Length: 409
Image 1 (cartoon, one colour):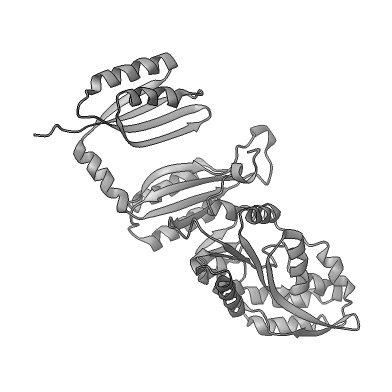
Image 2 (cartoon, rainbow, N blue to C red):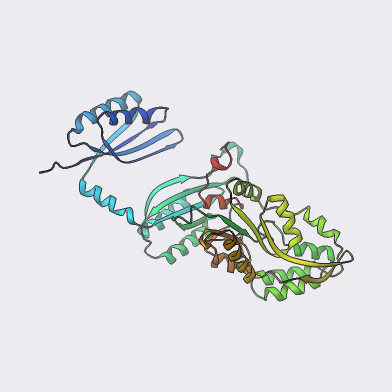
C-alpha cells in the first residue's frame, strides 16, 4: 500500500530583506522536496511568501519543519505550516481548466469602497481571485498631482454566472465612484495586441478641429451645433460633414497651420505613443476630421498611418468642399480591417479608441474597443471605457507596469 502523499503549505511573513527567499528554499533543497506552487509579494517592505511543497516518500516532514522554524526565527520572520490533503490538492489542480479573466481598476486615487464593491461583484459571480497586482507607480503623499494614477489588476478564474449583469454592475460602480473598470478574457490575443487605431478629434486631441476652423470663419455656433448633434448620433454623419464644410468656404489656408501648431494634445498621448513605438506596436489615425491635422500629429507622435478627410483648397482658401470619399463610421471599420490585413494580424489583436457615435463600428469590430471620455451613448455601447485618466491608461489594459514604461517608477 502506497504511502499517503504529505503536502504542506508554508506561509511566511515579516520585514523583507535580501536573501530571505534564498535562505529558506535552500533548506527545502537539502531535503529534495517537490515545489508544487510558489508566490511572493512585497507591500511596503513587508514580505508575504507562500510555498506549497510535497515531502518525498523517503523523508519525514518533522526535520524539514524544524529547520524552517529555526531559520525563520533567526531571520525575524513569522512562519505558518498548513497540511494539505491529497484530495484538496487534486481539487485545486482541477481548477486549471477554468476560464481566466483580467479585471483592471483605473483611477486617480483608489479608494477602499471601490475595491470592496468590485471584489464583491467578482465573488457574487462565482469567480476566484488568483492574484492582485499594482500596475501604477507609488505616489508621494506630499506631492499629489492631478495627473496621478492608481491602477491595479486582478487575475480571476472561473465562469461568470451572469456576464451581462456583472458588466452592468461594473458600469454602475464606475458612475457612482469614479473608477474605470475593464473586464477582459485573459487569452493569447490580450497579451499580443499589435495595432491601435485612434479617432483624432476629442480623442488624441482635446478639441474638434472643425469647430476651431469654424470659429476662425465666424460660424462657430452653427458648426458646433451640427457637430454635437452628429456625435450624439442624432443626424447622419456624412450629411453633417457636408453642411459643416460648406460653412468654412472662404477661410484662408494659413489658419490651418496656426490651429495645427496649437492643438491641445490629450493627457498621456505622448507617453502612450513613445511606449507603443518602443515595443513595436503599429498605430493609426482613423478620423472623420481632416488629413492636414492628422499628418501634423503623425509627425509629432510618430503615428504610422493616417486616414481622414481632405479639404479642397483653391487660391489659398477653402472652397467649402471636400475631396474624395468621406471617412465616416463604416469607413473607419473598413479601414481597420484593411490595416489588420496589411499587418497580417487577427482582428482580436487590434485596439480601437474613440469618443463619438461614428467610432462605434470600429470599436465593436476590434478585439479591444475603448470609448475614451465618450458620449453616454458610446460609453454604454462600447466593450470598454476610460473616463477618469489619460490615454496612457491603454498601456495598463495591455498589462504594462509603470516601471516598464518609466524606469524611475
